[in-house]
Length: 307
Image 1 (cartoon, rainbow, N blue to C red):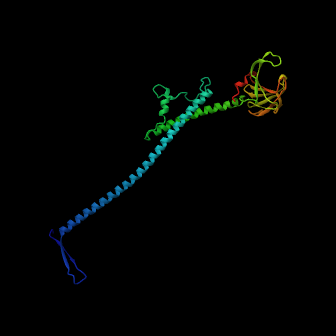
Image 2: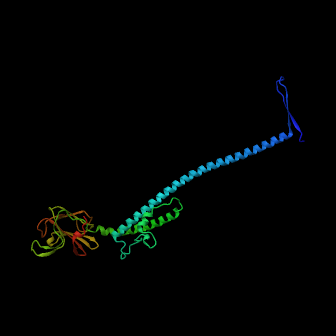
Image 3: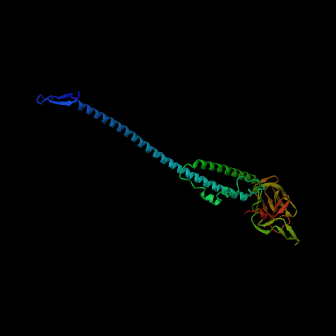
């Protein structure tokens, strides 16, 4: 069997060409077939490996692109977290400033909602300045984000409660602020201030309960705060008088008027023209006598004027 052989004849169509004979041993053919099989298997293996490597390259490229996008998104989240943290810091400082101005932190008022001092002022924690300096530091990785976002959420809730407290406070104070006689009642020159003075008629030392503002007759007189007209008429030496009630025990009086443009029961707004300077009553010249009374007691009008 090992000596078997095969004869291969090559016959040409051209009769002039001689027929060729080739004898091949069986063992050579078997060896050639084995080698061809090995080569085919190797080629198949290399093809599979090639396609596997190619798919891995494509997958790695996709992963690299996704990682680049994730890094960009994490960077943006870092920046947003830093921005939100910085904003909350500013809101905290603004809240403390407002509370200082409005005395919301006065224990007797019982209006404080959030902590007055930074949490870092406790023993073993950062000082407020150090906390502010490191508050916006953001790590390079994203592992901190869940806890950081939870912290920001809690801080935002606390700040919202603080702002709500301030909003309620200012809403409660709105009517009081509107009823405060905070502007000048007329343009002119203050010829006599609040306090003890010499009476221009008797030369005796008497209490002057308001401000005398001199100007030409007809100069507009305005309401110094929101209020209601409770008197418009003549009153002894004051001449033509207008009295406004601003609530909370606050009333203003305007005397020596030449004209009154509002009537009993009218509601007026701060800055509204209500009368005109005159020379009625016990007066040495055209001027406005202006008073502020709290629960019936005259107070220095200058204490209330903000302009």
